[in-house]
Image 1 (cartoon, rainbow, N blue to C red):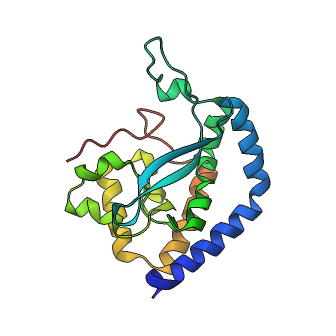
Image 2: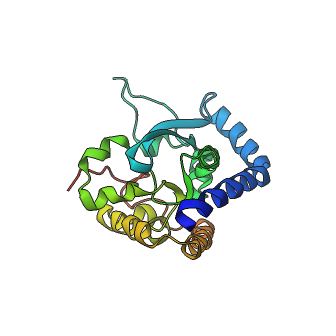
Length: 200
């Protein structure tokens, strides 16, 4: 009942309320990133949603588009702006995804939407993470986020699919808030972003 009906209602009301309450902060970050990224405060990218169907995710753009002499983008660490670093550290880069939740592409809680090129690399077990809508935060995020391995992350995602409930979602929300305050598990030790998934 919760998965089929109430979750979507809670998602819509929660995302709309959150967007209204955080609108002043949303505006400040947008203006700051507008100047830091040469007029491009937002980042748009195709991501797989429920059943692997693609949608366009919205995030705050934390890295600029600087390239080397050959026209290749510089490393993530070099392109990460000062305000972008703060936005990422505080997880404010995820804030625009409230619009994805309102639209219905995402849920507040669920497996994080990854890159489309990973779709053919999943095994049958890992692909089960697409049985539900992706979320702004999820069970894997409150149990390590980018600091854990891909196998651990997928195991947490599928566990959530099998145990989804209102009580679990509330638990994840509170654990997410605690993680944000502590800036825990934002990235792996090797890089600014999670390493590329190369399959099994």
